[in-house]
Length: 90
Image 1 (cartoon, rainbow, N blue to C red):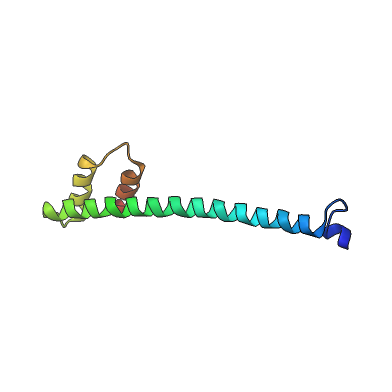
Image 2: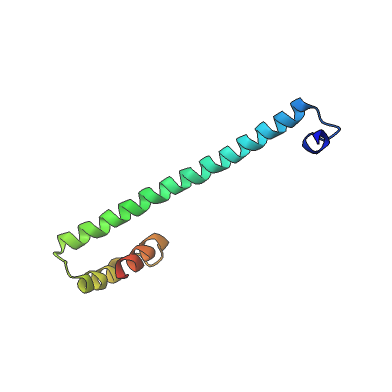
């Protein structure tokens, strides 16, 4: 059973070190992904606020009018704005 856990040519210390390095690598990957998600969440939040402000400044309260207005002004090259428009339509 020990040979399955510890390869013959590795000491307990080497196995533990390898495990610690693996865990640290996974943690760093998670931190990068988490950081990116936080940035995207912030951008989406800001775009949503921007749309809400535009709609309120133009006194648009009807859903159909809002969709027509936002379709005219949104950045068609922005995936985030496109996704928000789809979300509003649904």
